[in-house]
Image 1 (spheres, rainbow, N blue to C red):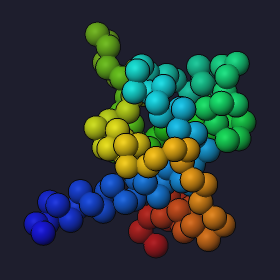
Image 2 (image 1 turned 90 degrees about the vertical axis):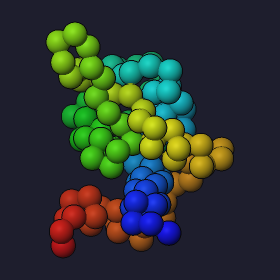
Image 3 (image 1 turned 180 degrees about the vertical axis):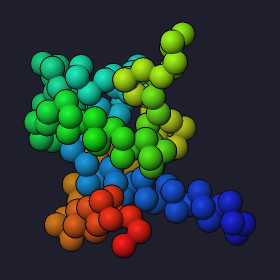
Length: 124
């Protein structure tokens, strides 16, 4: 196995684990396959309960978006003016989503704790 393959496998595993720890349902990621959405739009949607496992503010959603961008699952949409506040699914995000069948399983307490440590104390 080459270093590149090992790196790709680790990125895929890290992203898969994070999806299980975040409040987004599979329907959220499927919606991003078809189009882009901003944190403000998502927070104000009538169907937010079908897309999220917990009601979050636009700021909390934006924080989660930034984490998913850092992981390589999401990317900012680009228009004629440059980057926008809207996000889309990346090829890695599509690969992670395809590797999970059915609804994204929710992580247990210890897995969420480990995720929080990696997310908020990455060099610890």
